[in-house]
Image (cartoon, rainbow, N blue to C red; front, side, top):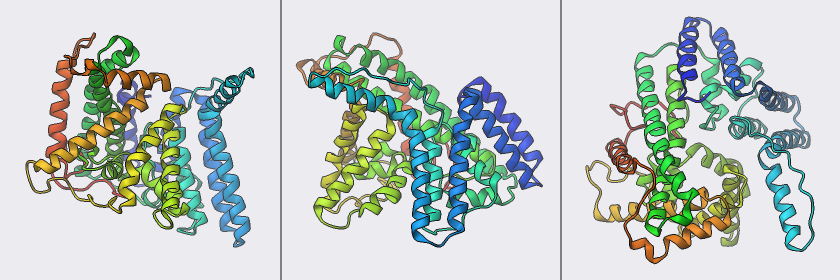
Length: 453
């Protein structure tokens, strides 16, 4: 059930009305919202509800067991088993076929031909998101940041709450569980702001992302037939497609959360106005990047230690980020590419140089800021070619096509609508620029309705 589907358009108002009819009883609200969330997951395929339940039971049990012991070795063992189960399920469904195929291909290069036995499993909805956000709970319990919950319904709702199912953000128990525990009263201003954010998310998804996808798919799927300028144009369209998809779903999730009285973590903060690659990564998919920072990068040593260790830590976090996005070597290359861009910034100690809003208090950026944003945007666009290409050969084909003499010819696209889509993109970017100091593109004031990490 997609957020922009007719089915969801019927589902959400029913949930909204019944949910607030129970506003005097938070336990009844939570039970109802849990049932609605399971219905949402089960709409796609009821069988995969078993994975949500397995993830919920495993992490809830791990928290309870760790609460009952003070022995560090036993607590570490419980955490290890929990991680193995959670990552094991994710690995089987998302990465098993990839690693088997890669293993067979590696032997084929040596002249040894093996038979690949792949599973061809369909990736369950939201599995990466609920795996990561339940593990953040278990790891924080292990670190004794808070007491594990004994409320089964609240924890299961934390795992499966339906606005976060499609594309996050990846919530933290420290933010979401307290909101689940306490009674929620209807806030008209919050709900109105939520509706605006849902509309903005729908605009991003249906007007920007879907229209850009039609053009980008045509160009990338037939890249051999297009000039360098057309391939570059296709990369730009994909740049706005992926942003419209990811951030559009996140905006809808945050807006739906506000309708239900929740304040979720902000996930995108106008990333295409970044002045360097470090700022881009602070503004892009914030909940995922801070998850990797807190549970992988910092435990590895972060920016402390020798330069060699910093290089290693940075390489690991971007490599894992690439794999998280998809099981293909192109995603690994995308991660390595961003390592190359990020290392000079972090090794020079300039990774926190830009933490404010660009051209803050001004209508227009300076020439320096304009150049910085254009240069960073160009680097990001180039990286998205690696992300979108079908395989490494396709990556090379697209890049070599762009950097050819045909780059200086007039671009042509064999599908209609490219001009009107460019106009929509211009309107979209203007709206984002005018509201870059706010939480989302249709917010009418500076009333903060979501949580920054």
